[in-house]
Length: 307
Image 1 (spheres, rainbow, N blue to C red):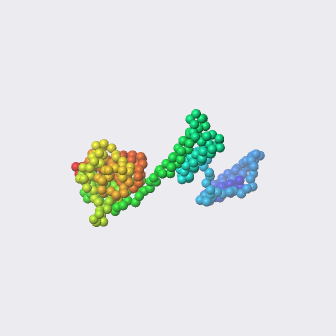
Image 2 (image 1 turned 60 degrees about the vertical axis):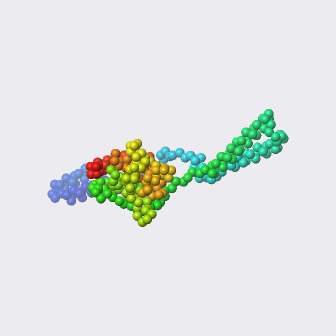
Image 3 (image 1 turned 90 degrees about the vertical axis):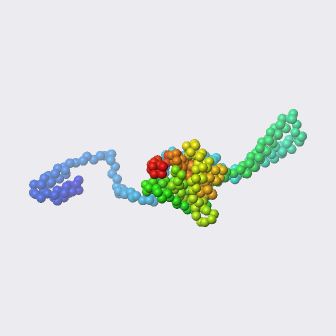
């Protein structure tokens, strides 16, 4: 309380310039000094010094107490021991086959199968199950899922732009390319509109004669079955594994090891060819974002300029 009074007196003394103001400040301090705060008997006095909490990166965060995702122990074990699990039916089938033969030998039953004997029927059923396990193990070892990894496109860097494009359209098309390159597995982008190749950027096939990129032949592309099929359906076409489609010969400007291609129609006169470096690398969200891509303004300006 004395500290409060001294603070008030100091503040008042520094701000007042007359004697009446100083007298008023002294009376206020005397009044405050007469106020007595009752002591609470239930309040415990602590003699511990004040603790200061310092923010530091070394301080361990609190453990998460919210809901946690459930773990599938069987799936985790199989993923960690893939080879052992695949060969497990062979061991189970072999052990079962030996157990049936051993049981037949020590049971005192004739080794010749008898259809009227329940033991013979049970042994035949057990032998069939054992052989099935053996065959299942052999199939699991021979058929393995192929690991899908991105590949390095075999080609050269290419950047061909239509010289008559206005700067606003050019900037939008380049922005589209940068967005696709960063957000997806896209490595090549070709935009053809009204029979003119507006943009060919990214990796392109290498010309066998000279060390240059193979440019887009728009006349050949527009007469191909791939181009006509896209415009007939008026929908996006996704070639998830390009090596399985015979129409890949109509896209010679893409690198020869292009893994996946999306053909996106642009209005009634244009198409975007988007090549990726991973089999099934474009997800459903990627396809949806390309389907609703912001090509509308570019199509309007391009149509007015090139129609």
